[in-house]
Every structure is written in structure tokens, then in C-alpha cells.
Image (tube, rainbow, N blue to C red; front, side, top):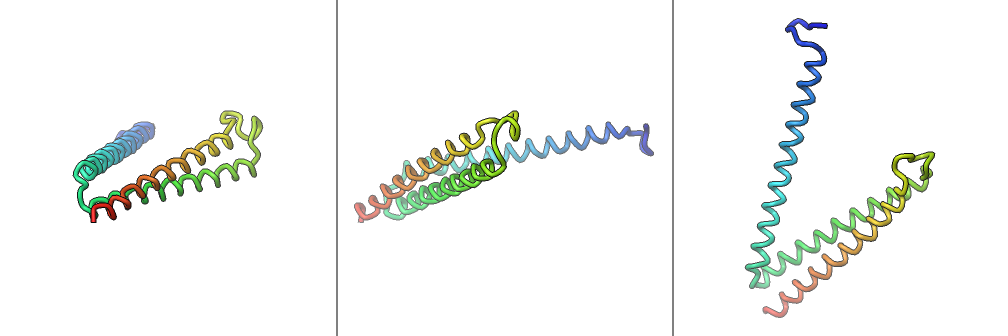
Length: 132
């Protein structure tokens, strides 16, 4: 079927999908570039940390990372509860068995990461008092 401007509905759909994919790819590239920039800045901060203020900034960064990891752990704890309530197994999730175990593993890993980040923050906080 042709429309007023001689385009098929399928052609329009293809155009919409192509634009959506392009926007998504662009967003992903921006995100990757931002992550690279943040990683580069962190590297410079670590390499040049000499003053108490430098170590306070690094401690704050690692405390923020610990907080973010704790948030992710809580999210996955909640998801595990949802799966338990919904009823896991071949009947409920025939193509995704092990969802509760998956969530529980992520909880464990995110909590461990949070502990590691918090410990690193404490190292930098102790450097503040050592430099004074």
C-alpha cells in the first residue's frame, strides 16, 4: 500500500527503527566517551595525589562508588524477593532458570565491591591525617 508521499508503511517503520538505532548508538558512544574521560581523570587524580585535599577527593570518590554498589546490591535483593514471590522455575521462567541465584550472586558481589571501595576510601582518609 502506498501513502500520499509514495512511501510504504514498512518503509516508514524501517526509517523509524533506523533513526532509533542511530540515536541509541549515539547515546552509547557518548556514554563510553564520558566513562573514558572519567577514567582518565581518576587516573590523573591518583597519579598526582599529594595533598590532604587530593586524598579527600579520592576518598569521596571511593565512598560514592561504595554507596552506588550498595544501591545495586539492594536492587538485586529486591529482585530476588520478587522472583521468589512470583515463583521461579520452568513454569514461571522457562527460558531463564536460576534468576534468584543470579540475583543473590550479584548481591554478594556488589556488597564485596562496596566493602572494597569503602576500605580504599579509608586508606585515603588516613593519608589525609598522615600528610598534615
